[in-house]
Length: 258
Ligand code: KIV
Image (cartoon, rainbow, N blue to C red):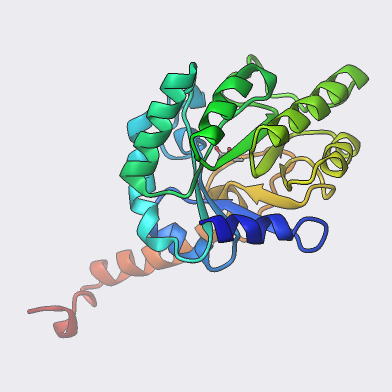
């Protein structure tokens, strides 16, 4: 695990770091071959469960999906999001992080926030838990419509301060979500550890997306999401063939019968 993290750190300023979400083994199997980090993100709340907020995602949700993902992740670093309300204090953060790691055998965990949760981050890293940070738009605590961050000098200064604080306290990388390009650049340049952007421009050391978004499985009109393939087309072709063959009694033929 340490060597996987070292490989990721070594890519800063050289090679772009790739991260994608996976919530189940079939997806993880395909993703693991291509990425440095497989993230079991709490975005599964909206993508799979139709929750209108990630606040509703439970520890059990995260653990069960991570258990499905784990056997398929061979090459990349497996990171699991700690859900909302599971790291309010040092002791709850450590208890819940240990539970996630013990039950899922993941390599690291991710927490949203900067200064406000720095005591918990410090406590986790001092207890030898590998932690990934997350700054900018923080879906677990955001109120109202999601807005991009780092647009004012004040916000930019705070983001840089938070990023440096996370680095000082041992996080190995930071997700930057929906941060203005020039601000993401400043943060990335200020850090020794890598930044992984989502909606935060090319100025980050790596990129992360929700896999269901990039393959066009999840309906979304978020500005930063590029649909790299329309997977629904292929799914529909397969399902239509099945329906046609059942209706025409072509399937199941002898070959598929006992
Ligand atoms: O929950 C998630 O999937 C995430 C990524 C989008 C960064 O945190």
